[in-house]
Length: 345
Image 1 (cartoon, rainbow, N blue to C red):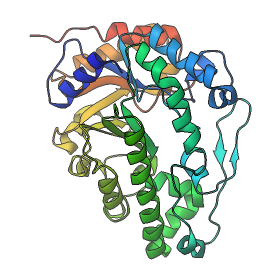
Image 2: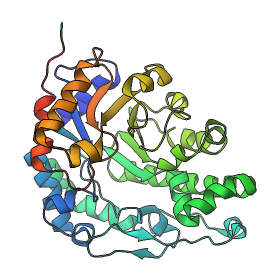
Image 3: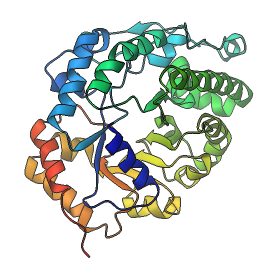
Image 4: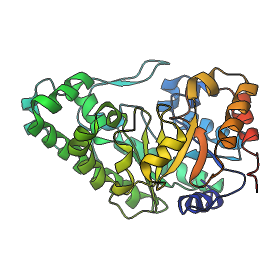
């Protein structure tokens, strides 16, 4: 993000209401490389391809904010790789990390990785070091430390079904696992901030939060997300595009001030549940409108959301979740054009 975009984001988080309402998207490997005509494997493994694709997005859509911006990542393999997960990188499919834990007894001997040396994390930092002068030459800066959340990572290390069942059958071991993952993530975010002093935001993605009710969230989600969002930064950005109604009322108490949801809960209901304390990044349907709809349908959806939202404070227009595969240039331009609708009064 540029200094101007960053300052506008901070203003939105303070409750100011820019006119027109800003547009922002989470962009990463599910959408970006194929939009540019590249295979996912080339995007993830080649610095030049990764740079070219991110640069092209910024130059094509200068009026949109891209979050986190120049995301150095290896898909869902990123953090599990530090725990020794075998990572698979098909030519043009999403990468996948194989399970590390096949028995809950292994958890008690699972070492906490060193983010400076373990797995793919040094390669992530190395890519950003290489890109930093190029990013800043474009007028942008590295703004966010980024990771998946502790429950999300646990589900990759164990398997989603196995993890969710173990929350009920062996809660003590699950707390041990989540504590170790969280301690690792705190060190990982701190290392990113130390390496790039321009970072002033924490971004965490954890859809597993949406797979549990409020009681389980309070026990297994809240304490670890609270610790992860404790860093002294002005932007605390959380993504969960699974169900959120059970956990959303607690997000602001964890320090979160920017939230990217799914489509399960309406914008007015999310505002009610959060007490109006969260800035929402959303909430146009990603697949059925932004990816597969026509430009006219995208424009209509954005205009309808704006017409139904007289109070546009703490709102950044986006799709629900990250940019999905298959979204066309024409549809993104239609989205940005429709967002220029001025607030009445």
